Length: 420
Image (tube, rainbow, N blue to C red; front, side, top):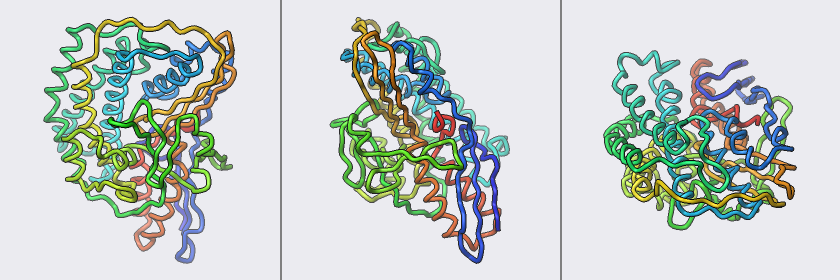
């Protein structure tokens, strides 16, 4: 039996799946990410350092803030610039609101139909119209926050720059954002209850859970590299801990842990490794949803959708807290060109995001490297897809195809980012 999914729907970007079962065994399987390469690293070479954040934001229409924050942090390290505390708070607000917004789109519009046996969210209407309205309200709330700090734009914001912001929202605007978040509390809980109620397929991954770790907080914009298998390192150690390899059938590279193998990044890894740093309400919901603290727990990749719902609850509370203390007016240091090399890691909605730059004394980029969450997850997706199919070969071909699609969508992949 040969199965080919030429175009995988309800994911960001273009990719497909092929597998063949012969004589009761899985003989061949590949996930082909055929999204055309876009050569972002190459187009950065020769550009001024302060042009980079706006350019890399265009890598992705879902997580532009993550690419901007990661590139800005790497550049600041290269030129020796330290942003002030208020700038860091504002960046956190933008990152948290972006992640919550991204998770909502994935959960409601992309993943949810799999658990209703439908091919699209439109097939759930009008029966799930109430959930759709909650999704729209919440999306507006989080987009408003991103846009308020992003120069009026939630998509490809323009006010976040190396060293700080060109402008921040005034007190009246911040007060309105807080009010909107407070009013959204019930909708957030309803989305969590919907997602946590799904019956998920049974599958155990051997992939190593990898996420950032920061003392005293749920790490997103910076932290040490950590894993459930004891990985521990600084941002600058990235190259000594991971490696990339090319495959002939895909435009994306596969990333692995040196000396070990596949990894999984994203909400599931974050919640599993940082459960003690979630807000009290999110931590309680995580336990109710079946998440167990400690290494080697929660190893079902389908649980990623529950982890995303938990993070929406967490980031709702975090944004409320940060909006209470962020200042609407502050000075920030002016960046000065300087020769140097800098790398940074952040947690994008889909997981670990790496940017690295070499800058000359005139502030011109001489080398750039970007490794995205889906590239980190690619090897594990194929391995777990193989395991899922082998565990369900007694099922009809159509059922196997739907299971395969649901697993890939559970990772919330961004194929466009993976072929940067």
